[in-house]
Amino acid sequence: MIELSNVSKIYRRGADRIYALRGVNVNIGKGEMVAVTGPSGSGKSTLMNIIGCIDSPTTGVYKLGGVTVSRLGGKKVTELRRDVIGFIFQDFNLIPHLDARKNVELPLMISRLSAKERRYRAEQALEMVGLADRMKHLPAELSGGQMQRVAIARVIASDTQVVVADEPTGNLDVVSAKMIIDILWQMNKDGKTIVLITHDPETAESMPRKVVIENGEIIQTGDKYNAEKRQDQLLP
Ligand code: ADP
Ligand code: MG
Image (cartoon, rainbow, N blue to C red; front, top):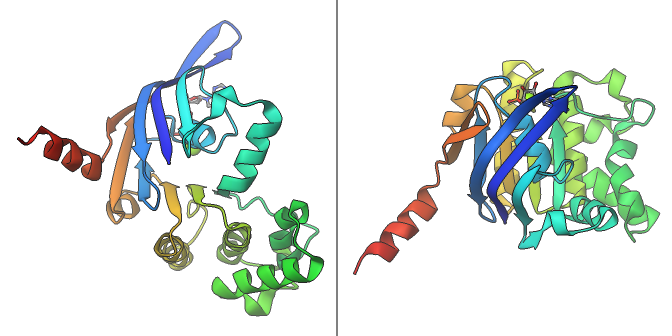
């Protein structure tokens, strides 16, 4: 589903060059649940932005669902991102003047769904994250954990195959954080491919697969499945 081959990202700041990613190779299959972990500044968000088609590699190839993203034009990339990727950010990214339901409905506006269907989907998604009684609340009237659940409901309603979450529990208390991780597990059980960025070792450890990144390099891919498959292929 997600294939990065020799991906590097170099940021230029004046005369300086910052090597955010250095020759990263990683494959994530459909339906996997993966934690990406590593110290601050190691390139986790850069990696997520490339996976989410928000940013493109300086060199190397990124394929999403078999499609080489860098070969697509801007409009096609926007469509691919919209259809395939759901984002969850540390700071929730909700629209302050829209209530919870409208926030969830917003990405559905460009779809062919009728107003009634959009509303139904949004309400279903909010119910799934336990916010049936908060549909009419503005973000400012919700706790951090509730705001993040609205952001997740937005992804559920959009029904994208891949979900990328960049430190989604970074601003939350322990109880709310656990709730968020439980919802991500549920989404994975429903078949979604989940890429969870976290610098919390305990959360990373609790995931089926852990990718460790340090100083722009993947030092552990945690790729048991492919490792086993390669091992099988080596057998006579
Ligand atoms: P992490 O998410 O693991 O904390 P990032 O991917 O945000 O790491 O950053 C990796 C490196 O790239 C850091 O040194 C950071 O300062 C640098 N960086 C990230 N984004 C930019 C940018 N837009 N311009 C310049 N440097 C950047
Ligand atoms: Mg980051």
